[in-house]
Amino acid sequence: MRTAHRKATTRKVSKGATRLAASVALVAGAASVAGLGTFGSFTSTTSATEATTTGTVVLTASNPARGFDVAIPKLVPTDTVQRALTLTRGSADETFGSVALTTTSSTANVLTGDATKGLQMRIDQCSQAWTQVGSTNALTCGGTETPVLASGRVLQANTMLPVVTTALNAAAKTSFLRVTLTLPEAADNTFQNLTSTINYSFLATQRAGDFQ
Image (cartoon, rainbow, N blue to C red; front, side, top):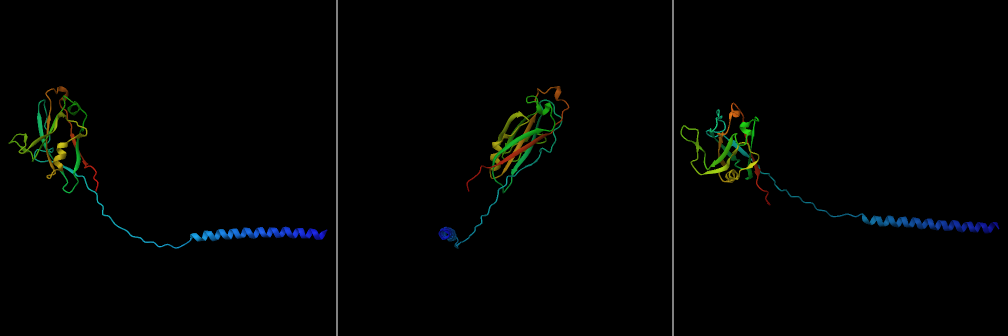
């Protein structure tokens, strides 16, 4: 009886050893397949450069004869004042898509705040510099005169000036402006002894984007 029991034990151990060997063989096979993905490769690299620059948008203002540097004296109803201003686009700069005007007042009062009784402004452009008429305070155009902004309240908000844009984009790159201010006859006693400074801001915007 003991001999038969020993033979059965021997068979079980032998079968277990066979399974272990098969398992090891599978792992070795997987490692062999993974090794197939490791190999050398040929490569080549090159480079190129592209010069890139950006344009500039530059607008300057200057005071010619009887410009904005000449203060406006004490006004009474029906008085008219004319002042010259020259706008110039930079010589090597991009053309403009538009030029807009915004005017603000340093002091909040009826002189600039009243839309009908307060200061009224008109702007004209000349093809050349404005000249003073004799000993008067009037400015005249010796070339072609073009309206820029019809008479209206002195305070403006982002008002487009296409005539100015066209002039600045031309070969001369210059816009000669005459600003005319008038205190209406309707201004009453509430307008007496008032003071204000009018700020003129011209905003030049770049030309439309281009496909280059």
